[in-house]
Length: 423
Image (cartoon, rainbow, N blue to C red; front, side, top):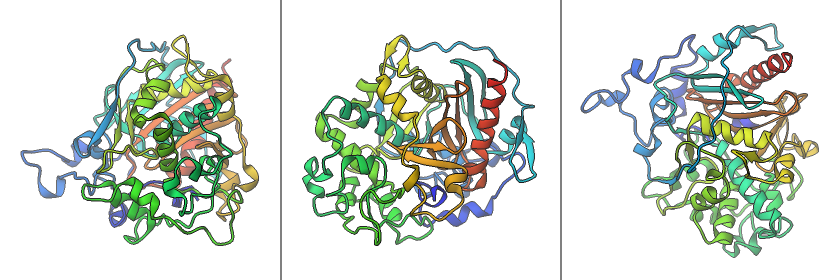
């Protein structure tokens, strides 16, 4: 399931997260003494190897640019000014459906929150920063990145520059002999392509471990990793089932670069970021060959992430400009592929919490809401029923757990329901 199949903690270091668990009020990076001193003590040093692992990620996810090579996506020339009317949401009640209840304020205090913002009909009604984060801090969003990649691909498809029904090999002959080669672009976009891929984080020999090693200095790089993936998933043909595979958006990113003859950062700037009215630069984590990670490498500020979500909610409009078409944004907000969603994963999370995955976006069960999700607690949540956008940036010690995957959407649903009841 999502809790076992998303880009997450570094292979070989997963055991560290269990040492810290959950706390009523998680310690901040400063409380922990991370990166304090000249030089920091050895056990307080955040490095490329431990930056995503708790508790080191309390510092690491806000400082990716200091640990890895990155490529910037410049801010807009005319920032989109978001109106604000602050409300107190701390006492909004949240029922988890299993006899447990809490309030929004209490839950946020215990959920490794770095940044949290709520937009009600385009107005900021709640905004908070914790753990040393500031409005200008660029926080790693992990797999939220996939939804940006998906949006760029949808625009190329709409403009006829990419034919979603064509096989990947038609655009990337280098992948003809891989598991991707005869899958259609749409199947890769929906993660319904058949590929044998193991995303067991604490197994240093797993495919996701190899993927992560390809990203580090001295690694083979993303393109070489993609060319090494040659086996299909036994029992499933392309299109049969949803199977969350981190390299899928890397294939999409490669097609985008090939089609546009530009870096992914340049395409992102021209098609989304510059038109969105962003206030700050975003940046992509680069592999050793200078290739952006299209599936997990974007860092951005809290408000700029909220601007993206509000643009999707607004049928593509932002800052007086049509960023993406109405057709694309309405497609994003319309659930699809429910029938194949739980064929591969036998878990109640499928259907009870989430109900589908399409175009690199998740949809939720029983609620008119979609989301871009990233491990360790990154969310851009878009509720069309109540016109609410919520962004959470976090440094949870676990890549995946009930708090991240199941409780967070319940909290966001409760906030949206509360705000919707006021109109």
